[in-house]
Every structure is written in C-alpha cells, then in structure tokens.
Picture 1 (spheres, rainbow, N blue to C red):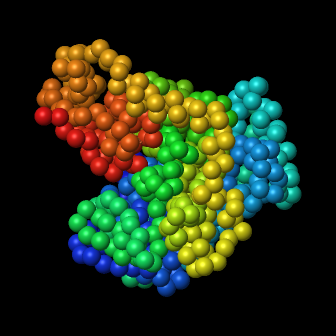
Picture 2: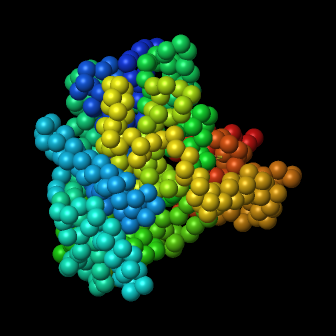
Picture 3: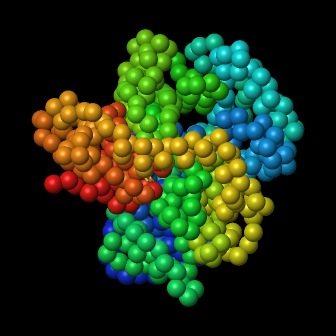
Length: 500
Ligand code: FES
C-alpha cells in the first residue's frame, strides 16, 4: 500500500529521464525535500541546477514521512545542553525555528496550497518514571528561549498523560503538495529534475565533477548528495557514523473527535500522532512509530500490529485506511550531518542523518549548503558540520554498529539457517542452504520460487528477509531490496544478483 501522501496526489512531473550528457553549475543527487529545497534556493540565486533521482520525485522518505514541521526533536535540548552546552543547544533550536519560518515563507511567496497549518507540538509521557526527563527538558528550554513557557498544561489526547513539553507555533503540511510547489518553481526557473536516473559514481577532475548515471554524464562545479543516506563510501565513511531505522505509519478514519496538535511520547514503543486531510476531505489520524533498527527480524505484531491495537483501543470505530513503512538515517550523536562531504573533495556537499526530523532539518541543510556554494559561511556550520568524527566517541552505539556489521558479514554466513524450501509459505521468503550455499528464496502467492544471492551490494552483509514488508533488508547499514532483489533504498545502489 502506498503512503497516505502518495495515494492522495497525482504523480509530480519533472523533466523526464536524462538522455544526453549535459552540464550545470550544481548537480543535486536526490529529489526529496532536501534536494529540492536546495534546488529552490539555488534557482532563486540564478544558479543552473540539475536534480537527479533514481526514482520518481519525492518517492523516498519524503513521500513516507509524517511531515511534522517542528523544532521539537524529542528530548533533544536537555541532551544537547548537557553534552555541548547551552549555546550549542540554543543554536540548534534557532536553526530549526528559522526553518519553520522559511518553509512558511516559501509557501506564502509561491502560493503553494499544501494544507499548511500552524499547530502546537507535544512530547508527553504516560509513565511516572519518565516525568524527570520531561522536567529536565523544560529546564533546558528555559535557558534557550525566555519567550515561552514550555510546560504542557492540558494535552488533548484521548488518554491520560502525566506531563509534557509544549512547543507553540509549529506546523504541519502535506509534504507532496509542498514538493509540487517547489518543483513548479524550479522548472519555471529552468532548473531540471531528471527522474529514474540512477547516479552510479562521482569523480572530480581538475575543478569539475563528473556525475555518472547509468547512461550519461553530467558535468558540474558543485555536487550535493541529498540521498537520505549517502551512497558514496569513500571519502566520508558515513556508514561508520550512522545507521538506519525503520518505522511504521497507519492512517485511521473515525467518526470521533480527533486531537488538534502533533504528539509523540517519551517512552517505548514510540508513538506519534497528527491528522491530515485526504482527497475526499476526510480527516485522517496518522499514527506512527514502532521503530527498530533496519534489518532486525520483526513480526507484524511488533510493527503495524502495535499501531493498529492502539488505534482500536482509542477509537472503537477505527478503520485502518492506510499503512506504510518508512526509514530514517540516525546519527550517533543525534545531530544531522550537513556541509562538506569530506576534506578530500572541495565543493561536494552532503545532508544526511536527520534522525526522523527531516522537514525542518532539510530546510536547515538547504540554507547551509546554499550559503557554502555562494562562498559564504553560516552561523550553524559548526553545529551540523558533516566532517565531524565526534559521533564515533559514542562508544555504546559504535559497539552496537560494529557488532551488527560483524554479525552481518561473518556471523550469519557461518550460522546455518536450518530452514528448508518447503517450510517457506507462499508470499514469504527466507534463506536456505542449497548444496552448502546460502540462497535467498521468495515464493510468490502461487508458490513460484525466485532465488537471489542474499548478499548486500553495498558492503557484502548477509540480508534478512522482512516478512512484514516483503523485502530483503540489510542489518549493517539498512539498504533494502524488493522481494525480487531490486534495490529500493540505499546506501546500496545495485540490485541483488539472481541465483540460477
Ligand atoms: Fe552496507 Fe548492506 S547496507 S552492507
């Protein structure tokens, strides 16, 4: 099933598929909200811009988000204040508050009809033992902004909450209607957006980049990697500094009154709530959450099941109209990576690791990168500096990542799966041993067998069968492939090999 956003909009048209070699001032790889916001600002400044994407416009994370425009990124401010100091936390807050204003300005200036609405955002708890975290966050926020009282007095959720943090004047919108407005502006300014155009490599010679697609070349002075998770391994080594998380969203219809704001809880499992309007003008409640590291073995009950159960507990007449999964790049220090990709390549930029808060983070990223391309600095450069290696000082998380990678590369190769082909049900999959070799099997609804080599084309980890979404997922850095082996999410870009 498509996401609520993709179901409720006609395809957004770009410039077709790239069919010739060409050139531009800036080539942006990734036509999601980050790449297109960057293209918007660059076109406004008169740059010749090309955006390419391996899929249709906004078909990745942007088409699957819950689209909350907020500077309330969980309990980030107590964490940042403790780890990096009040000034650092303050700048992070200001950058994201500015992003909310920037998005509103783009919408107003271009008369984009995207259901933009100012809303309050809440982080709440139902558990006594989490109340101290809420208090700490409110204390940290008092040092950051004296203008607001962040304590939530009454949270209009249909269950009892014990406390919460309120951010006023946040917003929500329909991200694809917004993207449609950006695309219209970019194309009007003679920017080009090529879809179904896969970038396979980027090289720099003299002062110019060559961006290789499967069939053509683009020559550009600057490159921006806005692919959610960078597909370039070296330089940058982002796969050592980030992992990917999957989460789930359902769209619920009910006749009962729905809450007005945007909400997320402190405790696990994380659940978030907001409403959205569908094509028939029905108000739909979006419940998101039940996240886990991508590539972990999971069941329906642990994912959509949690959300559906909650919906039915809250609304007796709840009808589940939509369900979809999404993914996010998570940094080890909870701060996005924005700026120069590495010290090796000047004029190559990256924006990634938005930690589930991509709406404001993508606007922050676009502004920082555009200022860099213009030759200026930004007061937020140091906060989001992409080249930092500080995250790997987070020894607990690094250890987890290494353990998962080693398991993915070595452990599972020697572990026998002990399942036989006959044990795999129709419309399901798994890895079996055939003559001492691991083979990925998918059986379609009629029992027809498709065989793949279950090795990730990024760095060679053994894939896991995901029976919830019917995909092959990589436990190392979160690449995903459809049931037949077609690459759907990076950092891998190649399809899995078929087994004959
Ligand atoms: Fe890196 Fe699979 S995503 S090895």
